Length: 373
Image (tube, rainbow, N blue to C red; front, top):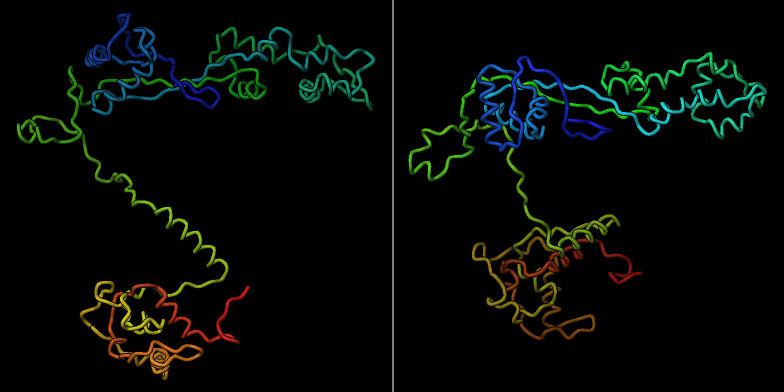
């Protein structure tokens, strides 16, 4: 695999323990596998890159085959890598015209050059030239401390060495290569290849291991002759999606977060069974109202009734009075209100039953409950 400026492709080089003359020309994957297995069976060591070059095969396909053979135990793989260098356009210009620091040294006349002009036209080479003590500064003027003939253009020499050795890794020291890359004079390609040998489960013809047992195998009994891939009992299963919120529920959730953030508190609406007093009577719904029929309300069989003793003393009487005779400007419903009917347990038909209880429990504000800005 080649790594060039952070990207990985394939390529590489190396040597094998034993040389084999491979046939050239196109090859199907089955033929490739047959030849590789035969070579491994004879005890040969295979270099994936050399094999790909000699046979004209794609290196990725060769690596893929060797990984597959290694997974089945037919081969072993050892990874190796090396770097190769290539001159960039800037590097080629340096070889042709010299380094920026030497170009600056040649450009400075005997009478010196203004610092502003040096920074404007030779900014790249100025830092290296100053660090090498090739220059001296006197006020606003830069002078040469050495002549161009007295210095060695090491940058250009290193690049020529790389060209001469065709980008080999040993053409320059590692530290020098890092400096050249930092100055964008060269690009570095990391090459990875594999050296492969015969594996413990080598066979002249590989039988592919089955990944799962099928109904057909069970019916015919062929599973007894099959080879199965090992099972990893510690592997995590695929994540199960539990569904998603309905769009209306998403909107409700957002409103809930906003209101809670403003300081509101949620009412305890988790009480699904309610008595008729809080569900209907406290809201002044007549006991003969059609909504209270068995067709529209689910009545609880056991316990069928609830005790109203927990209500504030006098509350039940006030509700009874309002139903029968009214008050506060109302004439009431004008019927005989039944306490037994109010005690019946039902499946709560609306959350307003909780609202009425909360309003009763909260201390009334001054002037009573009313809308406010």
